[in-house]
Length: 132
Image (cartoon, rainbow, N blue to C red; front, top):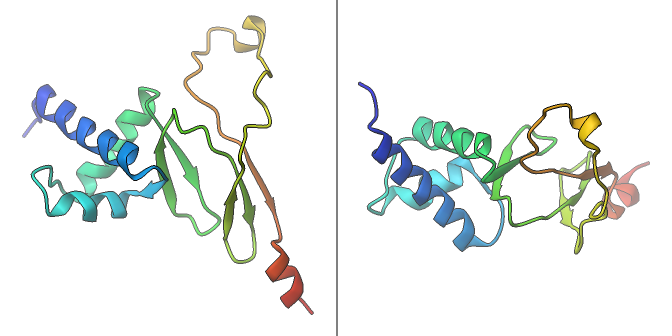
């Protein structure tokens, strides 16, 4: 059965509002659990499908942790991270180090920019301390 366009828009709006309200990144499973008890309840596959559509519309960004988990946030939350490749811990940066960097129209060659992500990978101080 095909989903009605307005139902899909309502689901996407519910997901976007939940992400904006939490003020941080959330996994699809966290969003599913959050919405499960309310009037915006939807299946896990529906959550991921609508997150993907929101990402394609440039409204949500996705960041993948070294564990493979995907975290979602609205694009207006322009956060970037330092991520430990050993334990997977992340630390949000207070600013975007690449604001002001631009891509020329020639380099874009018709590519429509929606958002950007920036992540630095390394070993956190605790993991460095625990290494032999």
